[in-house]
Length: 214
Image (tube, rainbow, N blue to C red):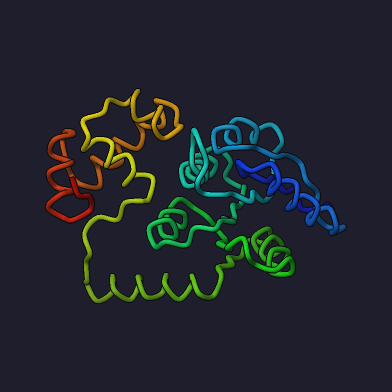
């Protein structure tokens, strides 16, 4: 049986190397690539064709959520597992919506990590129990027709805060260590979620909903 081809995406070299060491300890895994951010992952993945991508969320240039979304668009058979220290609800639901098949915190045990990689590679999903409970709670709320307003990711809220300060895309890109094209993507997504036609309307609605404060 061919080994499971794994790609590691994290902006910290020590983390990448540590995970790589763990993965290399298993005969049924093979490290086929590493990337320091989402943009590099999206650029490299088509050539190396990983089966499973271990994806961090908070990274410069392109975050994990956007990278998962693009990978799922370009590579139908790739499976993504979020491996992060961030467990805020917005991150969880954005990642799952983007197509993540697994969600683990970085304090997960090595056995939990191995189990997730094997399960996801077989087409299953594996979400850490504490996070799965929150997903079920959200689904139950939706079933009951409860709404809490638009859900923006942490990064989208950061961009929104920059918009509220009147900053241009180029300035936001520099401030948040993102590419200008990535900022444009976030701005368009914010407009869509807030049903806004421009920056002023988006900021006004965000203030009314309590998403940001000036």
